[in-house]
Image (cartoon, rainbow, N blue to C red; front, side):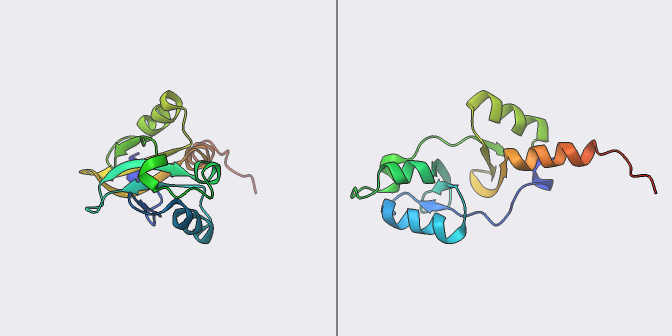
Length: 125
């Protein structure tokens, strides 16, 4: 199974030049814990989560000042590659890209849910 089959496609993204206060409001409004950071061309350049933003609350800084490298795989990668990336990089989210453009995101919860769905015992009626 390919990662493109389980990824969330409606991805909240942040811009490099967004003030961190604005980025915080975006995450709160969309009820997400983190988001990929993209440049003006929509290319993945980093990742930021709510705790990072909270740590810098009140500072007049931009997203680019507090982001960190994003874990990413191509959308045609197998699910196992996403799980391995999460373990290797100790992250809970992997950004899915197509030629550098953000097209989705997969969380650890998505991977666990898939595992449980694939290994669910048939119900007896």
